[in-house]
Length: 186
Image (cartoon, rainbow, N blue to C red; front, side, top):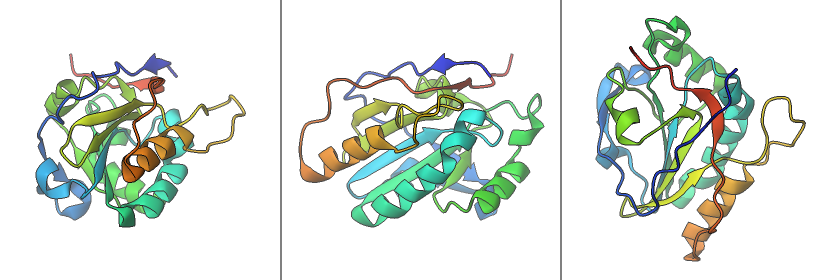
């Protein structure tokens, strides 16, 4: 399990546009524009097998249930090389979504172009955009990591969501996410 930090894309960056298939929705092509939230959009680079993702997925599902009705949408994207990591295949993505019972879209970035456009580095990697799709937060969900005995709270994301919803400025200190590196093609 490699500890790879996120690259911390510059705040204010406009969300790179994408159109990707959703394996759980008959591989229908879905775009950022049609999926984005009314008030904010959290883009999450993740996969099925990463211990860091497995560590937080239940809390992420809970956060989605808490904030989706407040105008914040989550969009998960799997960019891993499925030839070398078949556990992350589109078929397994469907199984993972059913098994973990999350309802936010989980898209497949086979070309890895979207991960590169976002400068994504690890799973999970979080990018939170406002209603204009400008980046207001990027970094960790909270201080918890597999094995560090810290409670999974979602605190850093909750602060970012609450600041956006209340019109308050975002925290100056944003800590990088940490996880397994994205499994790049050669």
